[in-house]
Length: 268
Image 1 (cartoon, helix red, strand yellow):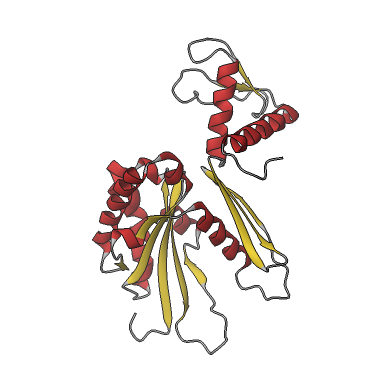
Image 2 (cartoon, helix red, strand yellow):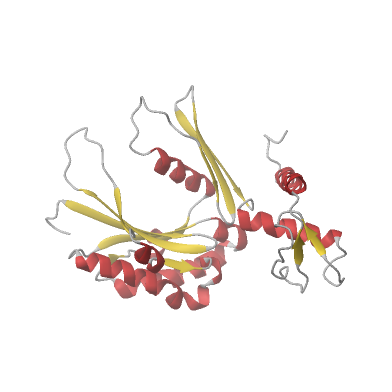
């Protein structure tokens, strides 16, 4: 990229249900006080978006990492080579799935495996050391990144928005505190959509007698008549009853029970 007025960086957003590669660009030379205009340039088309996504959570892919990440890395490599761009800094940032489901030692095994795959594209990506360029970010940082992305480029006179982001394994809440003119963020690992659903199904299973019983398990959160996949670790499925009010109460109970278990001070 030497001599180029444009700089690039690539990020793998390694979530609990999939990983996605993004490439960003910005002008290297800007005037004093001029805002930095960062733009996502890849993926942009439906085909690129499909190619840039690795299906499944990275926390489960330690033994098949090359098969998992190479297609997305290759798609980004092709895009960058078409622009004659090389040596692009590449960072892998893992989130709630890794934080919730793996110990620190297990996380490091996965991160090392991911970094080894990225090194096969050294001519395109600058991959650095594994513990610098591949990491599990804290929930507070994940929430702050989301808040910044939502409000980036807005002037002081413009409305600043709060963020409620529900992922597969965690939930982020970030907002500006009016008096201090700063942002606050709260992250709740275990309150993502997938994690909450697992706890809900475990509760329904327990109420229906457990994994060894037989019979229909009524699920108020599914449309009437819809049959779910087998509950993890069992052969039992649920059948939807389409009762929104019951589903809402169930979700509220899961949220309050989970927060109380974690001793969070703002629980009413």
